[in-house]
Length: 388
Image 1: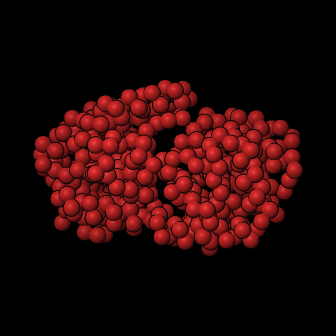
Image 2: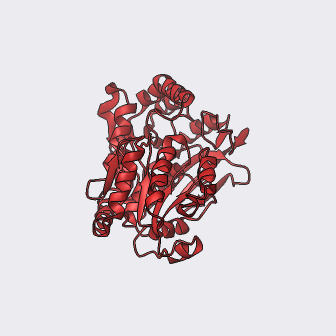
Image 3: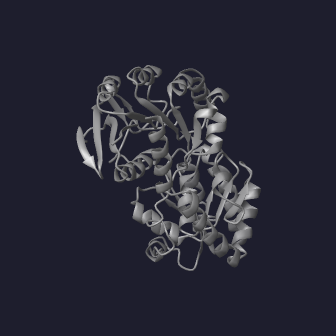
């Protein structure tokens, strides 16, 4: 039995996209016979060691932890400083065959070299592409890291996965391309499916007899929210029967709340800025008629897959890995930062219900074929067996 140690700053009960990825894949690897350990930092209140769904979770004490940062911070929360992490990794080398990093910004080239010196396998998953279009500070620091420490970590790796081909293309130096492959994020198609009822959500938010446009994302400039808001305002002027439902928090939330206060648009905008469960999220997808994600920078786009799994047509942009997800028969893609393009695409969908249904069905089939956690786990397992 191969012993795999998945490295990430955080894990359950903290909920995030990368943490979901590790949990879903880790469960499936355990079922395939791998001995799976997650080594992460310890958030106050969490156990130092516990079993979660067949995964042995080991947590290293943190010197400093923060989950809320000011909007000008170049690094998104949460952040943990765990000085003993490098020692914990070295200690784990006695027990593991392969280490797999899921956040290249948290670990040092020295950590990667120590794993190699102990003759253990090392993999890296790039969940984030090289930063571009987020903000000047983040773009500069992210690029600087990738050209220095990031390159050194990639050099030590036996294999580098990317959550999209675009992520690999813009992040990995050409000299390392031979040891790369795409391993898409997945979706649990049992949770996200068209059979889930959205009636309760429609009743809760007053959406009955409305055409519902849904957006789920962090409300940051890189998501292009400001351009979608322009499109929504234009739609509102000609169609009072539609509602834009936005789920998320972030620095763009005040802008949306100001728009919500405007009597011209107040009935067309619903803002959900509270945390909801995954089951509630699935119901929200079912309650909408179409999903829109106007990203400027997007390595993959998990929410796009979730909406497609729920048989919803998608309007999004050509940013990053999104074109690898959304085929022409599943949705409409426009250029980033194109408010007029978003308006026209949404209007086209809402004016053709048959097309929306066809796109929704095609989207679910595409997700089941290319974007499931079983496929992600299979991809990892194949490489693990090859390198050890």
